[in-house]
Length: 312
Image (cartoon, rainbow, N blue to C red; front, side, top):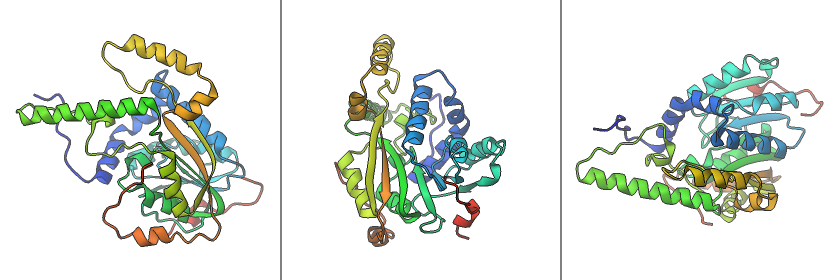
């Protein structure tokens, strides 16, 4: 008998929302934990904030988790719209942000990154961290990110780096586990996995992208790359009886030179600039499509209320 109840089959977007609703508290706690996961999360936060150029101005953080960037952005002069598809993630972010001194400069909204209820050109800075890999059609999301960004504004996205050897190993482990589970089901064994383990959920996309493919899709949306970096060389998961080897790898990874991190890191961070005059015809042509394929490969000025950026 399975230890965990079967995961209900549903569309990927609903599955992602339910997953993050279930794990919202865990994500907030992970940033403070002395684990490789917590270390990787903190490293990503530092890198994204370092790559976000001032003045940050009006900011929308899409897929904001529990608002882990908000405090620093507000300190740098931003007004922030914190957006997430998960209402539990938003609730966690609201609890954190409402305790801050500048909570009147932050608003929280439920949002679908592929159909944002936000005004075109409303934001100086757009963050989309840890989102694109869970989408069936990430190019639609890129076009929406471009739409809500003012000309010459900045868009920062992260995604798993397809070039990373660790991501390739991770993908092989996922394929092996899913194949084994399907085989067990065929012979009558219940092989449902822990629904909190995203890695082996086959109802949720979890893709890695190459730089060429991301650049092509972003260019079609009107975004031009300005800065590119990678991070995350720590072993991404635990393998039985290989704990000593993983620990040795992690010690070496922490001493790796920057050039190795930039090329082989598990997660890529790109800061794009919104091309002036881009119409995003790609988005309008594809908006009603039912499916798609992915190519291989705060300044001193007074800022309006973040609510003014939201359509009614």
